[in-house]
Image (cartoon, rainbow, N blue to C red; front, top):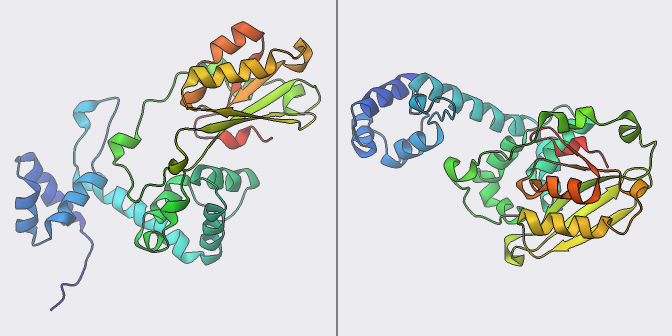
Length: 274
């Protein structure tokens, strides 16, 4: 007889927490709970609490694990409840948009309902998303999503005074020539490390596309400097970037060309608005 699937309950998760504190293995926990060991392994991987500020608090805690699981289930149900939103997201993915771009576009347009990038990634790697092979449309082209620790990297450092919020009104209102916005476009994994930098001048909407053989910050910033250097000073007043690690060498650009630099808020590349 086929075993019927049921979600772990709060009581299950509290029991897992107690047994983990007793240094019990995931296999033994699964046996005691009467669950398949893959269920417990997956639970410990997905709902483990990570605290970068207080590492001692990192671990598996039943109540927090329950909240993470319920939040994840609610995000997935949003796309079930809104089939038109789900279809639009699938069309965007197949057109080559990243989950970050899709989510950013919805925020920019004030779409209701809308989905976060994490919701979209979880949909891509859900049973339905894998059946449709949506992962093939991601830049990484990975069949399986990387674990939390491999995805999470410390964000690059950008001074608060460089926030896009401090960009002059003449720049935001497109009233002055010479202000650029740069973005990095990644290709699918099968094309290797090559990528392109797109640069848009805000007033004229003139576009420059630069091919980069790799994603390291110094070569990318060198390409941008090379493209802007021949221009007069009033044609290269500033450049606005997102907070990608490929743009951490911005001080060299500012020192060499004298151009001001501004940065979007974390995970908000849509703020550039070109």
